[in-house]
Image (cartoon, rainbow, N blue to C red; front, top):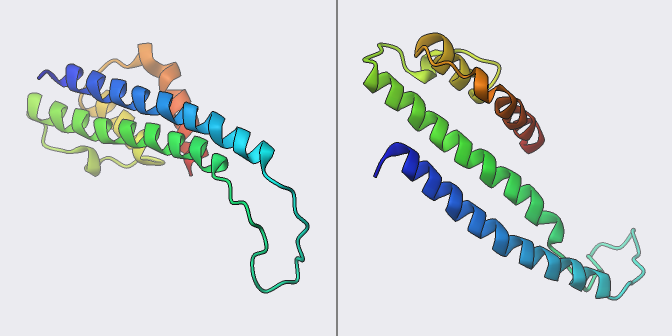
Length: 133
């Protein structure tokens, strides 16, 4: 399977997973709306809430999954460029403000790729990295 086909396959799998998560999110939001309200004693030693929702975990999980997919494939792309171009340094040898910045520097400055057409996507990914952290 070609490199781009593998990335596309992973993206489609993540997209299907997210579609299912959005369904679960809608159900969780509905459950939360219908959950009984109860008063709590904030000085109590034990948790008094009888309903525990999980809707607030779904979107952060999605952000982490997206960034993990990007991180996984950026490493592989850098490794591929190193082998393809017979480069002596790897992406780990390049310093950056963060891993995403180091990948970009490696691919542009060392591997010689022109990534100007995806600069806006890089900026979105950097925002996603900031949110994830």
